[in-house]
Length: 531
Image (cartoon, rainbow, N blue to C red; front, top):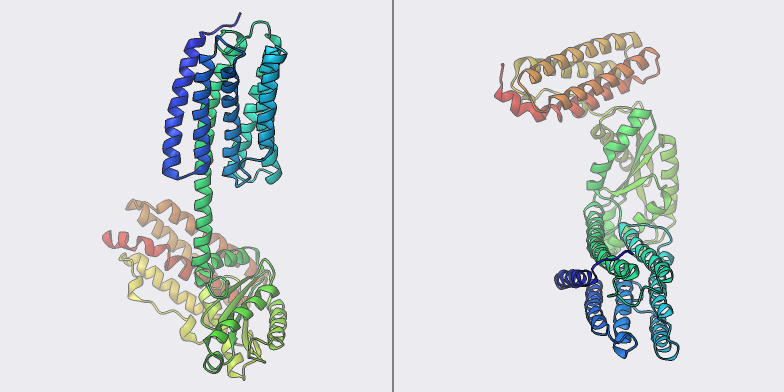
């Protein structure tokens, strides 16, 4: 016969229970959590109920034994209520009182009217399964699919208890002649006490995980709110420049990698200062809000709209060429003209459009769209201006001159950097003067050869001087060379616009590497000057 020393198990159960009560009380007090408070009361009831049960060992049919079972039953009601509190569900449904009444009436009947200890013991397990199953069903209805760690933990706690109670119910019927109470040393009593000990541990672990998960969810929610504040304009709800700076590089890299079209629309409200002066700043704010709403309703989910400045808005359009951007701009300008905002009967805007050129630095792209907007405003406002191939940025905006602050301190590397910048400017000249494909290819081949030699020399220097970022830097060099090799192949196949060569040189090497990644080791190279 399976038998364990019942008094030892009872003492262990009491000690563990007291320990858990102290822990939960401290957590509930510190966290000011109603849910953990309910769990604490549940374990207090468990302690009291077990003590009352022990005191009634000699009187199994006495009112004290019924009280002990009611206290132990309340443990499961309170555990279920604690879970409900965690998920903002009704803490104590009215049917809980029905469960209590059924158990009480059943125990009175089976103790005093029809003496049936096996059915009475079975009733307790059946009612605890009912309470926990009720909680599990309510949780499953509210969360039809497991969407968070908290829901998963709660469902596991409920499911584990149902499983252990079903096993206890089976054992009661198998061992019904040997089982009389928790202290008789039978298989059922030993199992009940062992499961109680294990359940205590499972529940305390689950409660701590639930609370930790709730803290994590709260922090995530606060993080999202903070991001909304940091990344969105308070007045219009559109994204601001912080978000643009964070996301635009990803969009541009994707467009470059897959040769996808990517366009931008810059919008400026005409005579906005006059609106503020004549109608007041409240109307001015209303204009900004209404215009933002029009833009949000007009763009796709993949598009992004930003408040660019005081009265300027920016729309970036992935997978959209300049024709598609113009179509959106035409719709917007018509919608805005037909909208009455406050006391303003006719609001007009000017727009500039520019499609991103492959490998073009974003700074130059912004300058092009800004110049398009300038043309729209300069030509009378209330119109759209597109960047044309024939348009040219002022040379001082895109032609680079070497600056002393770009020197890293190593004579060879600095000299090669200067030569590469000069070769980039020469590439620009060839592009603007519409040089022949052969001339472009010859110069681009020389540039790639020079770049390869420079990378090799730079890597030798960094490796020799044990630069900690050597491996990362070497991989960056490899990635750049792969892109240049691809561009050379496309140039040979006449499948690449000549401006893309200059954009690649300026965007990937000058702006994207020399002025960013290389700068990171300048202090290092200056300390190793000419070694």
